[in-house]
Image (cartoon, rainbow, N blue to C red):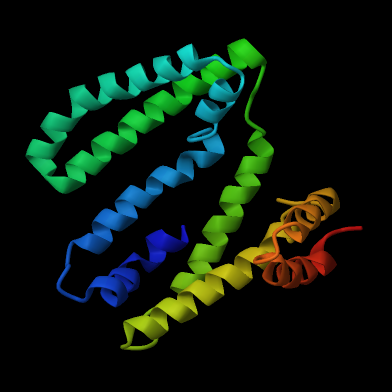
Amino acid sequence: MAVIILSQDLVRVVYGAGYLQAPLYLAAYSTLFLLTGLGYAVTDNLFNGAGETKLTFKTSIVYLSVFVAAAPALTWVYGVLGLITAHLISNLASTFYALILAHKRFRVKINLQGQIRIYLTSALSAISAVAILNLSSLSILNLLMGAAAYFIICLTLTPIVKCIDKQDLENLKQIFSKIKILKPIATLILKYEDPFIAH
């Protein structure tokens, strides 16, 4: 969500103002990662980790079939944006098919209530961040302010909306305590979130 709303300033800072259509392409492509809450890039790891590589192959066939059918026409009509759209549609189809396979084989299903909370937190953080964008004529300043606003609001809302609980916080503390480079930053973030979690 952060990359989507900050795509214009991000492209301007990294590549310059000459890439007029790049922000749209970046934002469109980034919507793919919103499927993560539905199992995108997760189910394949589940299948492979369980030794069920045939299931991964089946989801890849679904992706390829939809992409081959959709990409030529969409690219012909809409160009790069059409190609990205075909990629998104193909991933959506393979993600839903992977969920069906995961449920049948492992009785795995989405925690829908939890996912709705995460998406809600991301959306509210994005809306709040958008409100302060374009306050400056400098893209770098907009990027920094927008990213900071999104990050702070998201960190604040995550425990309030109950995307994480006390046990999640303890687990994160243990994980990051073993990563020396990230430990100081993670400690500050987790200390910030702690008061917002119901004990």
